[in-house]
Image (cartoon, rainbow, N blue to C red):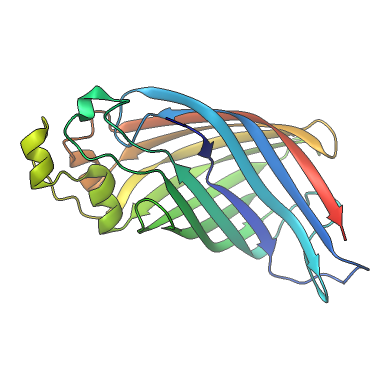
Length: 252
């Protein structure tokens, strides 16, 4: 089973329009590395997978220009943010303790939200929809304290909360009557709400203007029906990533 994981990475677009430059411009960053995280929601096993992430630094099309086209600037004020995440397939072929449960297809979530940033802190809220797989709504809320010891080094630390709809909760934490009859789990009707809350820390170091290194660590604790689910064997969910970043600047 493929375990390609696309991190839930925001693409920040400051709302204020900057002066137009000649021609169109598209500046973005890619991160490639490795990630370790629970094999599935509620699992006590750790799975390693590739980690890929995309963030948008600036976009200039016609009369409008958003972001700083020359460098990853310190953002201030309200902003628009895009968000995506890929959840790998959950299958009893990979985890024998799930025998009797229906497989859950891989899901690609796509969405957007708002942020507000100051030089030393940032808060955000994003909503995503599973365009494949679970086909339900989820949301992330978070806030970071930001330290910049140098022009090249930035540190972030802050709380996170994950919210899922009833459909999402039932997909990943629920057990139907039919599944209960063929598995070791009791029937469980999972309801949505705040499904996890935790803390995330990350560090980024710019090796040069285009190249950098980024790493992060996140600890979530499952809440409400996510924690009460018979599928869940571990409430504390730890994940980490490390990767190399590369900034691109396309003009057309």
